[in-house]
Length: 376
Ligand SMILES: Nc1nc2c(ncn2[C@@H]2O[C@H](COP(=O)(O)OP(=O)(O)OP(=O)(O)O)[C@@H](O)[C@H]2O)c(=O)[nH]1
Image (tube, rainbow, N blue to C red):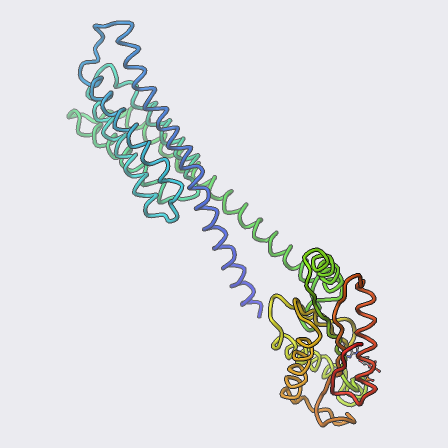
């Protein structure tokens, strides 16, 4: 039983984690794309600004290519931004992140080939990976799809550029990568922890809600929920017109049942009877509630007294079919119920309705039990 509860909790937690990962991907994916656009515009503006200050500046190699690449990114941005809203699964997000990463790998390639742009590559690399970390840390595969092309292009370039390996630059990249990875682990632990707390809170709220609104023995609505729904139904029916009915049900000779079979058997009997009621009403529209002790009430939406009588007949049949033995009953060899039906009329309060249904139930008892009576 405990194992089942744990499995259910784990399933709820995994579903919630998945939901929040996707939600965060949609919102922070947009932010990341805009941040990338800012970096692109910065490079473009920087190049134009340098030309403005010094028309002979050494920008010949990378400058024009970067301008074209900026334009390409702008087109890509215009297409990708609306698409991002519709991304529901991880694979297209990974593909999109990889494309942006690849774009930066190409930009790095051209920047590293120019003396004037070279010194910008490492700060740009750091800014890119850390903004990506902020946006994508909950979904590691998407984050790595973005980082991998950047990282590989830089590393391959550094190692194969000259015959000697630039130890300082490689060390700087390794330190930045180590900071990135430890930061990612830390953030994603906090993320998982906050989802775990959220999941626990929701489970707690639903447990408290169950305790507040359902009868712990039979699982049907309790008196509090019945009172609330009845008030609401009266207000709603008064506003929109129509009608509804209420059936009050009492188990026949239940005291004798308890005395004969014991209180625990009495409890099981109530559970079985409540099950019969649930099976015959329209759910979730109609409400089965435990009114108190061995008395139940059923609220039937959009039902007149005649419709309620049909339901009452079905209840009688369903209880008979359950065939719960009752050796001391004076009307049958099995458990039976008596029912009082009352149709709501305009201006009638909840209290009056319940009282009239109770009187009809009394009449049904008086008429020999195991039957139903409609209030006049
Ligand atoms: N096992 C069990 N018994 C309950 C519960 N709530 C009420 N009862 C019992 O239900 C019995 C109700 O008895 P009465 O009100 O005298 O009615 P009855 O014996 O059904 O007689 P009639 O209604 O006239 O047919 C009492 O013995 C209560 O103790 C419950 O939750 N579990």
